[in-house]
Length: 433
Image 1 (cartoon, rainbow, N blue to C red):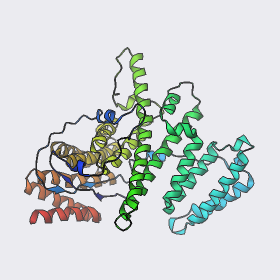
Image 2: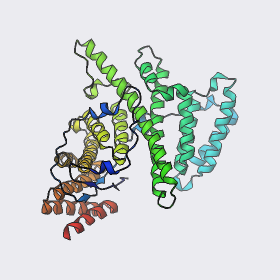
Image 3: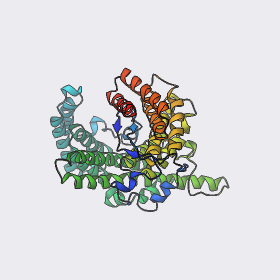
Image 4: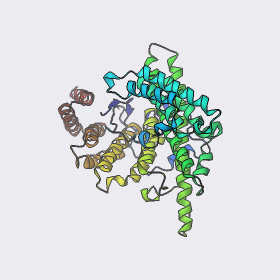
């Protein structure tokens, strides 16, 4: 359900540990979207409350259904009607489905993968002479997406990355993969065919999944680096690739949104701006709020995990703006907004901006309390309660910190979240010394 993790500890001071960490390449965004433009999206000022040398462990929470709905909405590619496939391919897909579309304990993933790959090979062979089965047709690319999904579920991240790259090349071509601005120009073309626009949006979802998979493989290599020294280099290389593809996605979405927004400004006789309003009503109709906020969330958690707080924070803030800080009262938006605020509280702690961390914690708790039976709200409530304790401890208010840690531990224990309970208990032990 929820995934808690103890992030690398950060000093609660105006001098953070960013300089001592391995920071990812500054080639995060290509083309005309720059790192500085992401920083410019921030509305927070860095006013540290403390110069303590104590280091604190933060608690981060991910949504149960995930703000990563982007992986479902933008990436969803379905097989075509059965009649579209030649009979030998249909037979293979039926056999694959019998192995794959079963409860987890009864799945035969290797068998499913073998059948899906054979079906894809037959379609590609047919596609060389029959345009109905061309390699970029939706019923063919949907099969590539299924191969990537099965590889991921098997833990074969190498195979998944290969499949995602293949899928992107089929959808966009090599040049389209290299430069996101090509797709921006296409999306902004009002005469673009609906199916072509859908192809770009599928590619956007695929690129996001590719970034996530590089990130996951890099984290796996990082864990292995203690016993396999060469794994550290592999981890760094994968983090660079994840940054490249998150940057590609952000560039595509933000440049499209900015140009669309300014076009509307001109139509209303208003001045253009370098930064759009991030009002959800101003997004292009083909960019649902869920897709944009999920992409920002995914990228932000990657950047914060690699100590690039200056990139994570503005993305989280703007995602929150697009969700109107949960002001519409919708349960899903309220609880997802509390998730975003828990991550903003963490960025405040990690950067030493305790005033911001306290503010986000308090605001997030106010939202999370509104729907205590919602998994997202409940778990963000635990994380925010803990993080508020970190803020109070760093500011020297030890009794207030103890109250927050105790409450976080009690709720985590009652809900069976052992990892969160352990973190809170360790914090109380630290205060008792």
